[in-house]
Image 1 (cartoon, rainbow, N blue to C red):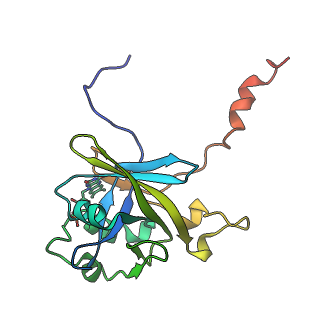
Image 2 (cartoon, rainbow, N blue to C red):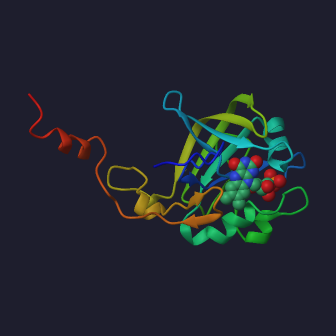
Amino acid sequence: MKVDIGTHTPLYPAPDLIVGTYDSNGKANAMAAAWGGVCASTPPTVAVSVRKERHTYHAIEERKAFTVNIPSERFVAEADLFGTISGCDNDKFALTGLTATRGTCVDAPTVEEFPISMECRLVQTVEIGSHVQFIGEVVACLVDESCLDPQGRPDPDMVKPIIFMPGYGRYYGLGQEIGRAYSIGRNLLKGKEE
Ligand SMILES: Cc1cc2nc3c(=O)[nH]c(=O)nc-3n(C[C@H](O)[C@H](O)[C@H](O)COP(=O)(O)O)c2cc1C
């Protein structure tokens, strides 16, 4: 039996995205965003939802650019700090000891030590309610070469992304592989196909 717990959004798991921007003074900043994900494959687009009170909100509005960085497990404390204090009155890169590197294609910094950085050009802004959704076209996707598999794809076991459980306030690492996509489901058809 299921119980209706109300109007919640426990969309488990959520990503731990670190959004990089330059503020109006040119200072590099980054914040954590769990409200985000892929919008489309073509054009390659991702979205992050940001409250208007965030320093990052004003930076994206002004520069029309941001980066989406994927931290590895070993940077969980740094990633959490990016989501705990504001860049309005703090230099989060100095405090974490991480490196802001100017984007190759957009006016926003990447987090050098994180294995994946997507450089995004703002293409749409959607006012929703508590958050404003920024949709960015990915114009470059930089990946630490030590995290690439032989086919040139980012290997999740090397990237070791952080998983966030919203409403629960906990970070997790990746679990075990439990099946192959577009394949394991076909096992259910065995003996039933014409
Ligand atoms: C794991 C995690 C996820 C978060 N997700 C979001 C989010 O999706 N949108 C948002 O506006 N704030 C989110 N926050 C809060 C901001 O990251 C936080 O307020 C941050 O200090 C804002 O930084 P800024 O003022 O430098 O932009 C999240 C915080 C954490 C720790």
